[in-house]
Amino acid sequence: MHVSIQLLRKDDTVQKTLRRDGWHLQSDEKTDDMCAQHPQVHQESDARRRLHDIGLLTCRTCRIEFRP
Image 1 (cartoon, helix red, strand yellow):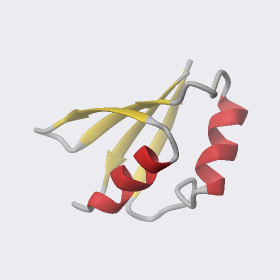
Image 2 (tube, rainbow, N blue to C red):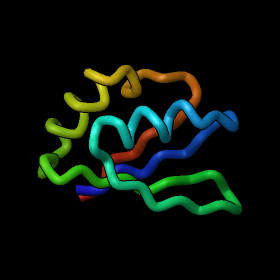
Image 3 (cartoon, rainbow, N blue to C red):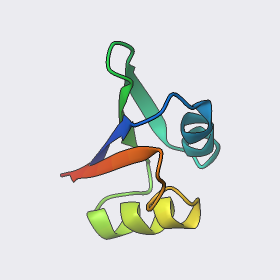
Image 4 (cartoon, rainbow, N blue to C red):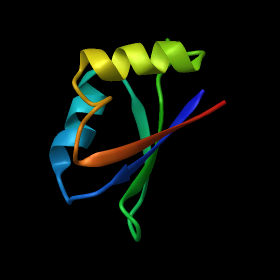
């Protein structure tokens, strides 16, 4: 399960929050887009729950797309 994250504003808070929760990030420096994976996330509902718990599911500074 991958999560594609597009940063709408330049802000390190999103990356720091994801890393602190155990997400592994791959960044595209040209577009500020990221691909995130978490070792305990195997389906979209798990990803949504974790992102909600850390306050990023409805965050205004990023757009999130879930990919199998």
